[in-house]
Image (cartoon, rainbow, N blue to C red; front, side):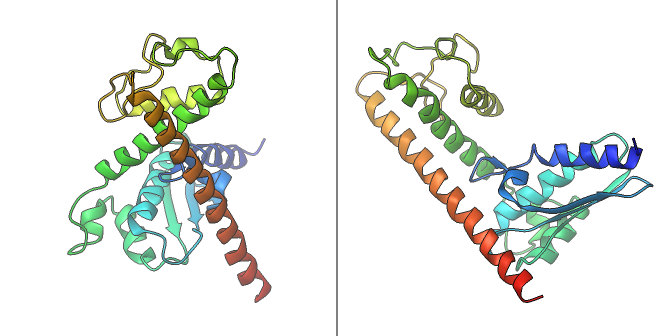
Length: 232
């Protein structure tokens, strides 16, 4: 097999680990990766595109920076360039990521803080949504288990459970088999008593919101670039 093709496939696989922070979905699945090529000398070039020209620059910066970090680590890639197209802040984002300058320096005079807290905020939302995905099928059982006493080890294996464990681990929250199934993503403490039904309703609303935003974003992306192609 052509080694360049192999490295390009590995770069594409690396991009699949990069998530939209708000939607908690791979940018490859969402259609945000317009192209990914690797030259014979190991130079990777990735082009990203987003649903609208005015997508929030902090979200966009996170995805471009994460894409760069993922691709540059691929064996066989000597250098990488990640380009965000068709966005009002493309120049600032592309230049900042290429220079590894960070968000504040990239938006000098406009940004006041790096994006660590924003990332954590979206991870907490992902934990809430994942809690709904894992718990809702359990509640549909008869008799339904006592979720106040349930642990992660009590839930049947599933992709949703694996993802929930991963998101909790990223926040340094308990993710082992003996950890409570339902926790407060701010503190890591188990949710019990009268707080549990409200917490589960919030988890359901969070997952519903993510599903709605995902459908809206993918639809807008398809519409935006279909219109561009029609006018070419």
